[in-house]
Amino acid sequence: MATTGARRGIYAGRSTEQRRAERRGKLVDAAFEIWGDQGWSAVSMRGVCARAALTDRYFYESFADVDALLTAVWERVRDNAIQRVVEAALHAPSDPIERLRAALAVFVHDLTEDPRLGRIGFGDHTGNAVLERLRKEALQQFTDLLIELGQPYLRRDIDPIDFRMSVLLGIGGFIELVTAWLGGAIEVDADRIVDHTTTLGADMAARYLAQPAT
Image (cartoon, rainbow, N blue to C red; front, top):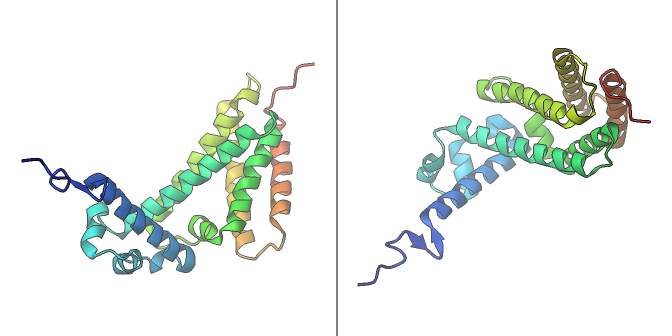
């Protein structure tokens, strides 16, 4: 007797793994919307399942608890931001400061186009040890990324520890600036944030960049 699609784990043209991935994606989407609109503390298993139109058992199919789901949302936002920043930098003119400007511009303008990104990335994570850890890790991840993107333009004799401290200082300051801006403490448009940060970045980078060949 022929084996049916259902017995092989194929339902409506999709495998069991594909259907599980789709359910997981719906849960992450629902958590993103709730977190982005109301804050991380509003994300609950039942609330997410209700928005995703899934039963509780499908939540535990993909996530051990709500913190695991919040981590998945954070990682999606972070990975998308990294991809956008890298693409913008690599498609900009081959000049380190112009590439910095392009990366900053896409990052800042994405926050204005979808305010949920700002609430997730720059909102108050106090009270959730997992999110506080992820935010600290993201600071190091973006520091590593900027160092990697800047590597081809650096002088050979720089102190790598000194350079890392400067990059870390710059990114930390940028995060505080954007947090204050999103919170309404600074009333300027996105372009001014980009211009100001690029100018300060150029000043800081001048001590590390190789001089262009003449």
